[in-house]
Length: 143
Image (tube, rainbow, N blue to C red; front, side):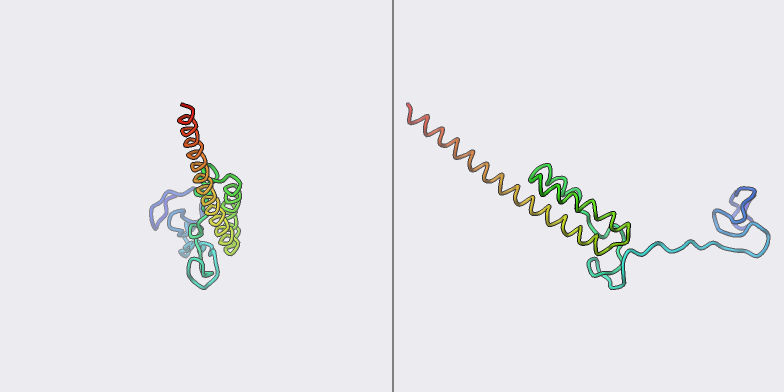
């Protein structure tokens, strides 16, 4: 059955056009208005001010957490990954405050892990350099 309004081909038993929403039953025209998308926040505005937030506005820091886990500090990286994973599930449940809290914790643990990883690498290079220099001095002293 073709829609008299837009010409879209619909199923023979359809009562409403799948394209324009007009009634196919010959009576008065009816239109379908889809419901508005869900709101992810409360009035107030701003990314962290309690305003409406789309799922993409609260960062989850998952990539940074994985990099910290692999390259810098395993224990704190794992904690950051756990908090990162909580962000999207809390957004889906409508818990904006919880998602922001988990996002901030993921960011904090990722940065702390990154900092500790850098400090550990500096200490390791310093100790390695000291050992190499000591080996050179010992080799020169034994000549």
